[in-house]
Length: 422
Image (spheres, rainbow, N blue to C red):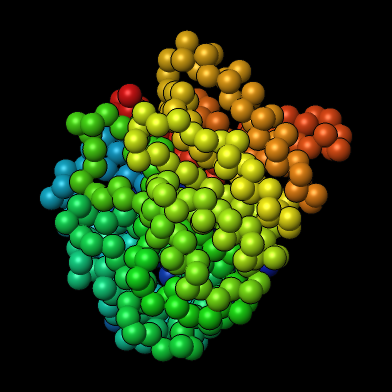
């Protein structure tokens, strides 16, 4: 512990510190050493370090320190109970989560005047305390994890009203099975809230939320998605379904949201939806209403698991998107083996069909004059990845399948977690 401050002093130009792994968690002296050095403005807590089992932070001491951090990032793995290959007992986890929330509260309330970017676990983010102070410099906010209950979900709108200059908002949170869709802003909301947003990502949003009635003149990226990915849910064995909601928007709900929104500058759009009778209208609306749309990512799922996917029909509708440069599709094909499939015979059977479908889609979508490539999600082992199919006017290789195209949602899972998958 004593050598850490001395180590920091050897790098007077150091601006960012990442604590990647710590068997004893992230104790206060580590952070105190960083806070005491004004040249350090960014702190990241890695996935193998946390606050769960550290001694309570000295709140009085922290309150007496001037902290000038501009970035604080702490986002935990998707399933804490599976960390290190072991299941944490529920009672122990709940107790330690409370301690973590207190530690975070002591730190964050001292950052409110200077911090510009924050990423926090939803379970322990001290939102109630954070909603009681102003955040004049905050521009980027990520909340990721699981809501505890309905009361917890209601804390998000209260906090967002304190961040008038937010430019990037990401809320990736699951909800317990007995909790309705969580509000983002709720209703009603001041018309001036969040109008500076450039990027908005919300998992499992409430289609009636007032955030979709605001005008976003500067918004360039919108993602209405799932969390975790719905294909991961489909890969579970039924007896291991987690006690959280796995709902996604329908195409009717997506259409309703997009028609309410004013976003003249939109450039990239991601939608995750369950296909219903309004899907054609949704796709036609997207292609006809956003003249600057350059990238479209669709994750389309079937209500009837035995239904065929009309992939060529979908492609013909998307041809109307004349400005599209990148089209990414996860079409939940009926003959796809699905995520994390360990059966080599099934994978060998699907792979040539997958490639054939990709070229078939490209043959139609190549009519988009500005198209750079069509991306098709392939459920590789162990990770899903985007495979690129490039138009005939492009140089070789036109089929690109590389590890750096891995889906950003993939995180390596432990052996215990993989056992829960089929």
